[in-house]
Length: 89
Image (cartoon, rainbow, N blue to C red):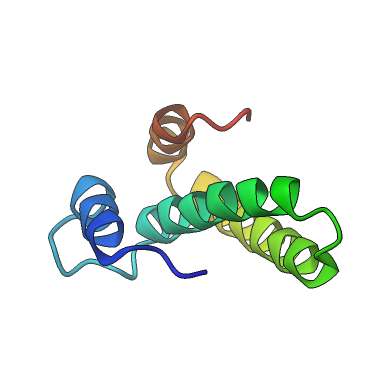
């Protein structure tokens, strides 16, 4: 379940420093959040898809680790990021 190319490009331009900045932690967190939202909807529809649920948990853990890194390196950027993404922290 990959993201559509248009949504990836729009996320990169919104959260990156330029159009080619795909490696920034903020961009990676935003892309993971989009994939998590898609996979959450999938798991709600297909409750017995245990491999999908496992993949969702792996993505959530990866996003949590990246958010922890962003919080330690750039606190203001972290606060802005979670506000824009609508995360609870």
